[in-house]
Image 1 (tube, rainbow, N blue to C red):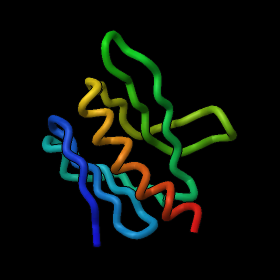
Image 2: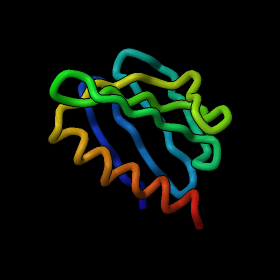
Image 3: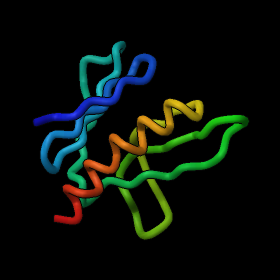
Length: 90
């Protein structure tokens, strides 16, 4: 069963071993196999800035999207992304 995370104009869908990113204003989506997915998280004011995209090496994320989240949104995101991590580690 697919899991969804909505933030502003974005909806992230994790279905099996695929994470797909939809944007309200775009007709195309971005899809990543969890084995190639990278996330970079940095503090940003009183929240976080999260970049999701293709992982390159151990410390670089390219393409994808950059999302700003408050503490509550980030807590929901952590629960959501844990599903992708579990799918990757199977």
